[in-house]
Every structure is written in C-alpha cells, then in structure tokens.
Length: 470
Image (cartoon, rainbow, N blue to C red; front, side, top):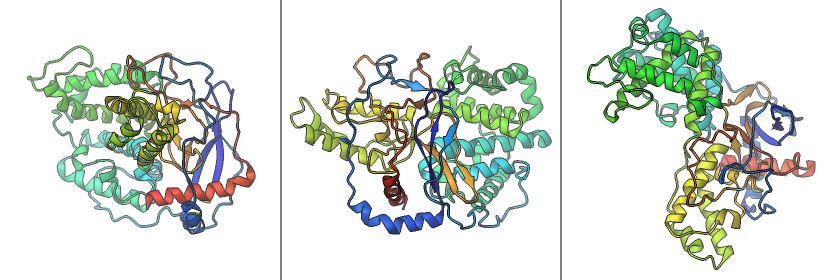
C-alpha cells in the first residue's frame, strides 16, 4: 500500500506532496516479480527537472528557504492493503531471565524501536531513525531501572545479557537481526565505561540536578540545536562527575581538555540515563531524540568515492556539458545506493562533494548546470526525480496491522543543490535566521502524481528499493 501525504506548515499555509511507503512482504514479492523487466528499461537522469527552481527568497548564500514541519495530511491509499496477517511477533524471544531491565514496562517503546529498525529498512534508515531510537531506548531502560537498582550503569555480565535479551525481543517483533553492527552498539555501551560515577546518590550529590532538569525537561527540537541549553547543561554535569578523579580540570562552558574527552563522553551517557529516570519514557524519548537529531543533521553520513573521473569531465572550463553531467550522474548513482538522508544532511552532502570537486579544479557550478537537487543525494525510490528526503525533525516509522510499515518520505521538493562560494560558511554552522530542522519548502505547485501514472510509478519505485536492499 502506498499513500500520499503532505506536511502542512504551522500557519497552515501550504500542503507539500510526500510519499509514505507502506510495504509488507506480500506486496514486496509481487511487485518485484511484476516489475523487474520494467526496471531494466528505465533510465535515470537529472535533466528531468525543468531548470533551477525559483525560491521566494534566500537566507545567506547557501541555505535555500526552508519551512517548518507540520503533521502529515493523508490522502486515500492508491493500492489496497494486503489481507495477510502482520509480520510482527514472528518469533518468541529466548531470554536469559537474568537481565534487570524492565522490558515489559517499556513495551510501547520497544515496539516503536522494532518498527523503526524493521528488518529490510534498518540499514537505510539507520542514521536518521533506527539507531537514534535504539540508543534512546537503551538509555531509557537503564535510567528507569535505576529507580530500583540505584545504579545508572550495568556491570559487564549484565550488559551482555541485557543487550542480547533486547536483541531477541526486537527481532521477535520484526527488527533487523544485525542491529549491533548497523548501529555500532556494544555491551560496553550499557556500562559506566571510564566514568567514575554510576550510583544515583553519588550523582545527585555532585550535580546540580535542579538546574539540569530545568534545562532539559522540555526542549524545543529547533531552538535546542542553536542555543544548546540542555546540551550545555549535560556537558557541565558530565564534566563535574568526570572530575571526581582529581586529574580532570574543570573548565567553564563546554570546553574540555582533549585527553579527558573520552571520560566526559562516557559520563555524558550517565547524565542522559539520570534524565531518563526523571521523565516518563515517552517524554524521555522526545528529549533524547531531539538531542540526537542536533548531531544527526550536522554531518553528511554518506561515503564519497573517488571524484577524479568527475573532475576529468567537469574540470577547468567545461567544454562538453553532456559528458560532465553524465559523469555527475554516474557518481551520484553510487551515493544514491547508500541510505535515506534528511534535507539538512543533504545540504552537508552537497557541500562535501562540492569541496572535493573544487580541490580537483572543478570551479563551475555543476549542480546548476546538471539540474541537481538535494534529493539526488538520497536513496532513490523511482526513476523520475524520486529521490527521498526524510524529515530533519525526529520521526518514526509506523506500523499498521493491515498496511504494514510506513515512513514519511518527501519526493516532490526539487530544491536545487547549492554550490558553495569560496567564502561560504560551512552548512553545519548555525544560522538562526534559517528554520532548522525543517522540511524543504515545496518548489512546485503540483499536488500529486496523475492517477493513470501512479501504479506504474509505484511498481518501479518499490522494485528499485528491493534491488538496492537485496
């Protein structure tokens, strides 16, 4: 099942078309068999765009106009859902019986995590959705258990048992069986590591907990990324408990000596667990996901292969536009097989690639020349400019018993990829006049695909996802 939806602005100004992918095993198999031949005849290209998109205005020299995110407004489904039973709870987990974490009390949280890390999509949603949710869940489970154990960390034995138990529970609900590898989670992540404090009473005697809770009890997911009120309070608390060892020098603000950064990072995990113990799980999740998203959107998660063949076609003065754009298309096709990314990550990715090309004497704006947009850097779900940009605010996949797994994916924002000037600030730098995090503003007035093209587009789109994931 696929449905179209569009986020509305906070002022209810404009509906933007989006794609909400709802896929279950029955549809996946059928679609793949029906469309594999159609896929072989499809061609992808960047010349499908009519040209540079006109913006209402520009902020600075690199940030396109962005609009606040709103609640998606669903349209009617285009294909009827499969009558097959849900694939969750597909196995009974074999638990150790020794883990002290209360998984039952966090049943709803675990269910969301299993959906966010669903087997097929976990690798391509890892950076934005799956891993942040998994890390938040672990933090909350340990934080909540500290109410009864008075410990903000597990010992080495329990950490291995509890991580294994959590894996079993999530896999039993359809999650990927390689989450530890996908999200680089180790049993040591559940311990205190190098932090010298793990007892709740000791933590509360060293830290101004009232100040910490006031700064982090409620965070604005946009303002926090700029002002870092909660993040600074966490760093201050982490530095204080790390300084229990007399060799750590306390400094004002977030400045930490490099040799002590690892210990402070480990203590930051202790601080987050204490915060999670003071908030109910759903509230704690919002805070933790909001904090992690500030870091997620700062860095492009893609791996960039060698750019020399692009430089050969586009370097110095471009004599052959077709050859240059062909080289760019070929290069981007490698990036498009990696993962879904947010619009803000896409901005970072455009700058990263531009800087690599400039180092090889590509001085002309090849993004404009070849009509490349932000969504061309994300995983593709179709052959007609259907790159998918995820929301840069925290989001989750959803599960419905009849329609399967869904996640919000924006296909229609043809925001041109910005080519940075030599004096440009990094995309990750903070510009308070830009509404970040947010979804890109709609670049066209089109509302959705024409009905007679929808089914063909859907079949090709899902088959491409399959080919990438298989």
